[in-house]
Length: 213
Image 1 (tube, rainbow, N blue to C red):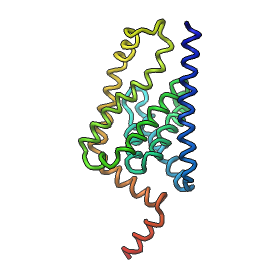
Image 2: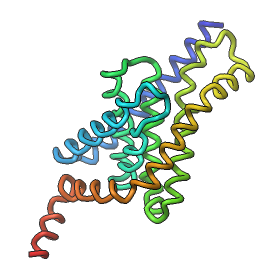
Image 3: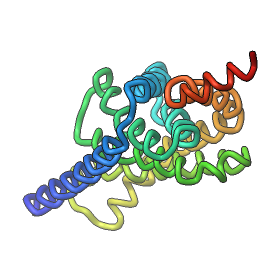
Image 4: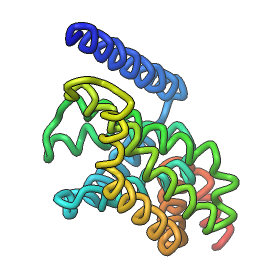
């Protein structure tokens, strides 16, 4: 039984890694500029630094807020890549394990989803708050899968027990996302759009400056 669970878990991880690599390939084919790659590195650093100070409190972190903002402002590809790479960098400080892969897929999907729904999320702060709240739980549900191999037996009751135990932390994560998106979206949107003009659309930025002169 243990061998079957281990084999299933290994296949699952291989599939996840394959999906992540496929998106990296798509991002690579878009031929991002050096400036774009530098911007992604900066966004990842901001996400990591927004989490480390409160790492001792599960669920209380700003990484999800930054990743959602990245998806909305910079698009689904940049949102996904930023989400995938953030836990890798974070693991250098907090340690790496099998859960890191699930964090990669959860945050990657979060950034991707924010980018796909950006046109709707830009219009309403309530929509953004609901989106962030929902993803606080979706993130937890995805990463909780890492706990299943450690159960003595995988049953409906034991799986529900894992998810019930994580509910308070998922709730903290959800509320944190909602509050940050509700209160600070405007500020970070302006900052990120300026960075977008400078790093991704420098020609447009120069034209704007020239017109201003």
